[in-house]
Length: 389
Image 1 (cartoon, rainbow, N blue to C red):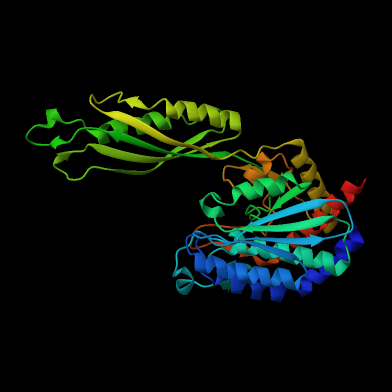
Image 2: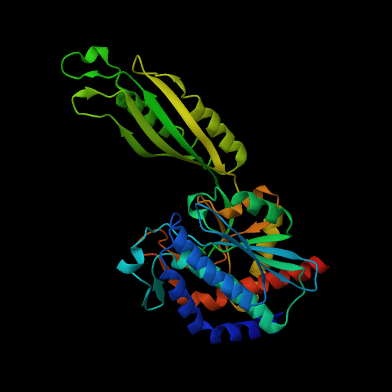
């Protein structure tokens, strides 16, 4: 195995400049989730590279979002490995013109460098490394790229679940943590819209005839935040609020958007019950009523035995490559959550090391390209050989 990894590392070292060229190509395309033309442009580039690498390519056309892509390589073994990445970013059109990819020392800085253009490329280069080494002891390696992960994969998650259910392992190309950790567990996420309905009135002439929806909402926000820690790891955040029409009118409506996270689906269900209980007559302002909509939109990705086994395999590969590897849990969600809900062993954070995702300072550590790509290639080899036993 060490001999194979040495050859893979040598090959990848020779590919560093090409990787940076590919990274510049992908990062310098505006491809925010709702920019279908931009996301499809990235998708066409990926499809071309997949075809050049001998993959069978299936496109799933979409009307609103970018098209979904599945690349499939067939081998002579029995293991089926699913790699997941996405084509979209959070950045609006025009971002690339303002700040295209730039290199600052060991950092490649630009929109989507680590989330997830670098990870997408690491997946492609890892498969290329396996092909170069002649390794084909797998039944299939599948690369699944969706187009709306940054808004929770509302269209693609059903296909993600289906594909994951058919595979022996799922490897997600979200970036490694800034300290190099991979991700073995993620929280469930939920989104709620809380609406308070009140009664409008003239704020100066007859305020007593009104029912102030904003005041009731203020009390509700405090009560919602008191749910933080309802169970270990539960977080609640009042993120967006709106209400009222004029400064001299008692507001008859207020709306709040709430984010909730929980470490497992049982805790998420308890949060659901607690927030749903806010619905009904206002508790502090007479004449107001509260409406609650929403719920869990991404199931938890708990640390299960199958994932623990993948962590152990990845750590073995890392040791052979000469570095230590640790896993961690995080509050953010990914398509790995949906794959885990299908019962598949899932390991996430397998992209290159990076940080500051979703910000003007988003970066990827260039020096992490070779070791993290070799890690992914080696992990797929270990999964495939382990399956043969």
